[in-house]
Image (cartoon, rainbow, N blue to C red):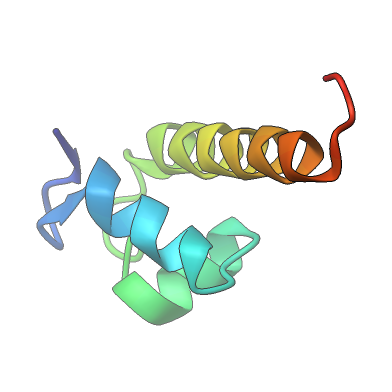
Length: 68
């Protein structure tokens, strides 16, 4: 699904950026140019960022054998 129509950024693009180390909207803006024009996508971009970070944290905890 498209998150930022101005820059043509999808949820997948944001998830891949998080996988590469993006940890804030500022990082996403720098790497993907998301929320740089009209900024209407900022809330959705943050939501995608948090979702991916949460998923990565759960995977890390499972790898460590810790219950979430």
